[in-house]
Amino acid sequence: MSPTAEKVTRGDQAHFRLYRLPSPFQPRLEALGRTEDWYNWAGYKAPNTLWDEELEYFAIRSQAAAFDISPMTKYRIEGRDAEALMNKVTLRDVSKLKPGRVQYTAWCDDEGHVLDDGTLFRLSADRFRLCSQERHLPWLLDSAAGMDVTVEEETEAVAGLALQGPTSYAVLASAGFAGVERLKIFDLAEFPFGDGTVTISRTGFTGDLGYELFAPAGQALALWDLLFQAGRLHGLRAIGYRALNRARTEAGLIVANADFITSEHAVRADRLRQPDEIGLGFMVDLDKGHFNGRRAIAEARRKGSLKHVLVGLEIEGNIPAEHAIVYHNRKKEVGLVSAAIWSPMAKRNIAIADLARPYGEKIVDDLWVEIYALRELQYQKLMKRAKIVPRPFIKLDRRTANPPGEF
Image (cartoon, rainbow, N blue to C red; front, top):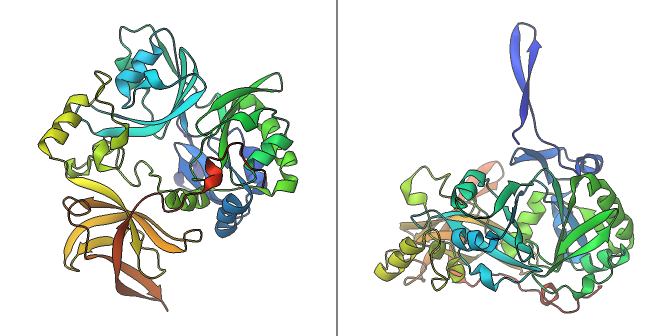
């Protein structure tokens, strides 16, 4: 699953050319890519942008956008004890997750620090798919010791495509996926496709009407071609990560190793975060019995020893405060912005920030951010007022509308 390197000799010097893994959709992405703006996603060659970051964002909000999620780590968990394993390692009560439903969840180490967050798909009574940012196979296998369960990584075997935006349902309907209109938010179902099936869930990372499709890697190009043929009259466009990042910020959604550091990646002890410190406390179900990190999470709540809080900010002006330092009373450093944009939908300058308690919890007034704006080849320091506001920054009724609109 790691990229390979080839030794290349130029004159009397040796160089190494690093190859990134190709997505099952790579031929289509390469054909559409005009910007040649690629990045490394878990060893895969993935697009930051394909044609224009601004227009790619507006494709999400005004029509339909396709984003390749094949590099997302995917695990198949199945067997008699599959539910018990998922209940042991994740924060939520998996017994409440019915077949044909999806759960946004997270999991922790024994000290209650977040290892990762992701989505848990219950495909049947004893079969799950767990999708995440990081790779956790050894940890999952260790956690499954003594259980009647099989855990296998299927990242390379399963192609994934996010279809997001107001016309996303219309694209699927035009593609012939009859019955997809019955999917409610966080529902999933299997639909006939080719010689097999494609799994479609009403999920996504944009805060908009949207779906995610999973199919065998060998069927990826046929699925892409079907969707883009059906989407010609519905404005379907392919997008890269930067446009998706704008949309997810508006939706107030967090990204591992961007808005928080996963516990396996944290070098400094003060970078570790419990679920309550990154807005995921709502997931924690202390009534379901033992799960990884339960004792530490309960103890931190009892002692009131939580040290951080993740908040939404609205900032004066229109200059994004990306990576800005947050101050109290313009003097004391109290946090850092992890994501920031000027939101075209909310018409506000918004940000997600990590603050040191009691700031953001008991002390919420007189907050400022320090922005460095590039003006005529010189950086100018700007101190702008900030106020704490709820997330999501935008809420679109079409995301949860039943049945979904065709727009």
